[in-house]
Length: 198
Ligand code: HEM
Image (cartoon, rainbow, N blue to C red; front, side):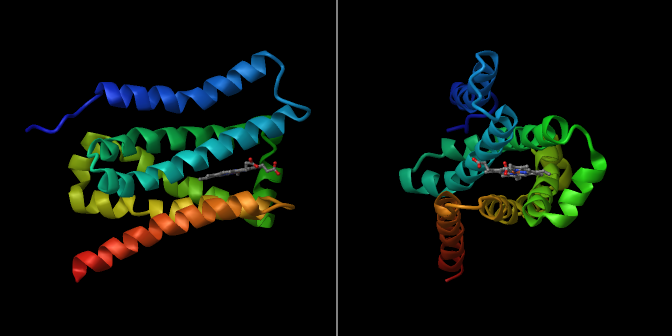
């Protein structure tokens, strides 16, 4: 049977679901419902949805194996691109509404605040992945190079979680939950790799 390709109905649903947090945030904005610190709410919500989608993207391969759902593999690309979208808006909101384009202050933050440094590294590493998420790029790079490049995600997601862990000052439970899930997902891959070699 020929594998399904392109913008199939399940991909359309995945995209619609990924758009919901952004629409919810817009709804809250227009209804003056962003809390006492709207800037912080926007920056944090965009960041947390970026991280959630990155982790979900990482979970799709094991979930596809466990539930024998090949379609989950095809969902990785739209979910990865939405994650990049949310993280880009997260960075943009920090630059525009938090720092008012104060490049000196932003540069000082990158150098002085480790959580910003790691967030920035994670974002910079995401750019080549997003830029090569299209069929033409896969063809041009070749499958092996493309696959190796996209293994950067195994560094990016932990960096995103580290960024989160470092910025939370009081209760670190939630960042630790993310770290544990990411650890499990990466551990599963290492286990798979060892099993296949054996
Ligand atoms: C892959 C990249 C990134 C991910 C996954 C990510 C994720 C997150 C998460 C989960 C939060 C906390 C949300 C919460 O408290 O509910 C956060 C907050 C934040 N992030 Fe990021 N982020 C990334 C990159 C960046 C970059 C590049 C910058 C800026 C240069 C940045 C600046 C911030 C700031 C300023 C906060 C809020 C800190 C505060 O309110 O105290 N992040 N981010």
